[in-house]
Image 1 (cartoon, rainbow, N blue to C red):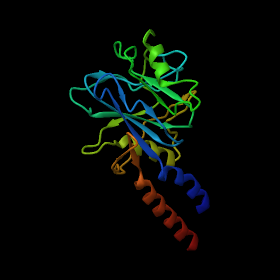
Image 2 (image 1 turned 45 degrees about the horizontal axis):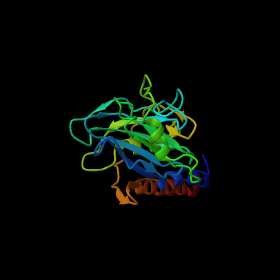
Image 3 (image 1 turned 90 degrees about the horizontal axis):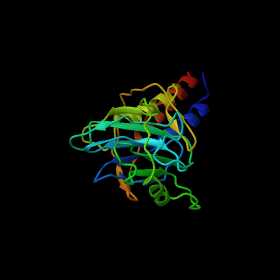
Image 4 (image 1 turned 30 degrees about the vertical axis):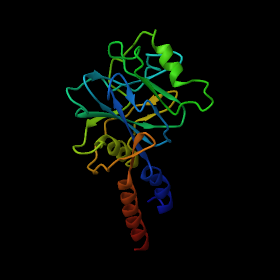
Length: 229
């Protein structure tokens, strides 16, 4: 059995993870917010609005095109009224910039792009990415990959996708993560944990997953009790 101290080190990052909710097409051909600052281990939950959109991990140097063959891709999400019934969630692997876009019709060319962790030195800006996208040609991956598609939780701004991915990480199953250079895909995970509520701060929705703190505390208590017997 692993020492309790090792278990604690593995669990704590997920206890303090944040879920960033991003509206896809909420109010027009936009991502809302279109610029997000996220820490490693945080979740990006894309919620879709009418009429049809998708989200793809892109490249600053080649706007409106997948960053590589492993770029995350939600698939087409047709919605009659928003937010739709499905979400697409990925985990942030590091703090490198991650660019993304919608490839439906001319949405990317119309400025429907965004970025996670934009460079602080302004060497690559969201405004520059939008400008370059206006004359680019959109490309779409052939299969959904790099994230978890799940049902939107009723009465909440978050979905079970975030808890599923984190549950997958804690159980030792490969999890879905993204970084500025590549994406690692995983099998779809499920979880019975109840999603927590979200709080609006700094112009974006952030979900402090306190549920995992409770689970971590319970697990550690059980481990220490076992050690004492």
